[in-house]
Length: 547
Image 1 (spheres, rainbow, N blue to C red):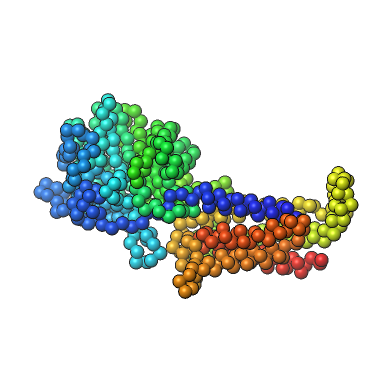
Image 2 (tube, one colour):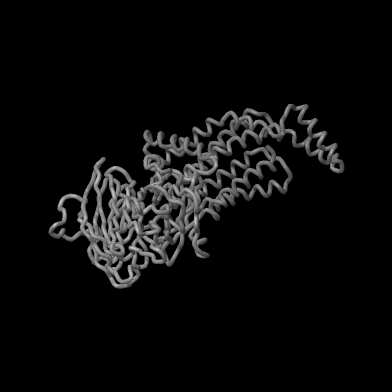
């Protein structure tokens, strides 16, 4: 492979990484933990999240089922837009995987804390929160009903329920029923929680007089302050197409999607909070203040029967998403070479069962990939060495026939024929490896297994950029080693092409070093390992092919 071809491949890789860096970085990291809700956060009293008053007489003391009648807090308007503080209570459901808190004001999810994931790398940090409450932020699971020209929202409606704090484990289930009244008719939200599953079943019963029903799935953006490396924002699976909406695009106005809405919600690099309707013909995504709202419309006349939804608030773990059904697994976007990424992820997790260290697993995976392509790489490097031996003759031909391009090409092809060389012999084996390279990149970029996973020494989180602290300065040691290894690899690559191309290639190690400074340590470790193995392979090829 000549220097022109190598330059093309290197620049192609650069463009892909630049695309990931500049185009796909979105709103920010997963939501950070929040302090105990303030009195105005959800319209409730100053009690801590999960605190529930002692049930009044007539309420069930043991289960989370059953309900009593309730009225709309502001019956005069029914819109629920008044600013008067409302008092309510919170109902806590504790499962094996998460702790969920429901507020009776608006009948909304106020908190979902994932037990198996921490807010930061600190092992003593609180569980990761997927819902960000706040005085100016909407909570998910709102309800809007339309009757003629009037619209009823339950934003400031006080629901009533006999449910109390409940713990469910394994395959146990518990049901929480919330009741309110819309224009004299009952409105019911019924949620079913399972101890060992993330999905939550939601059933909505609305008055038959309502001409339209919409479930409002909201997301607060208060914690999105740092740029991320992958897409974060609103997403929806419409039919078979995954539609991702950057929050910045919503500043120009709402976005409407029509078709078979399989699910809709919000995603970041490692987590998903979404709702899958049993049936929905369209949805509208909009933004106001620091909240995104997705209004998922029910089919016409759906209020004549209960409307069912499946809620998912959990990790973008392939096994978990597959078990959750409703094609939530499509939220993990592995790109064009997703099938290859899935295979590599399976190898990564299989290796982890032996090593218990994802850094070592990345090295093992890189080594296995290198071994699998060893014959192709050998053929490529040998072809490059043979091409290098012909450079003096090629230079003479170009100088001799510089005024006759046609004759020059004829002479060059004749030279290749005499030496039984294919000018693409060094390039084609490399091209065959590109899908695997991109598949591995996507696998490591999206693997939730790497989140907060330590490697060794100063690398404590493979999903974050690595820094060795020296006198208060963070030094990207792996990234610097990557640049050095790329320099040596370049020096060992057979030199060909004109001097101008060679000078351009001299800057590639610097370009890649700069690019990788902000990349996750897992990706840097993979590239560094691949470079070292390539140097070793080139060394043996150099010894086996005489110059």
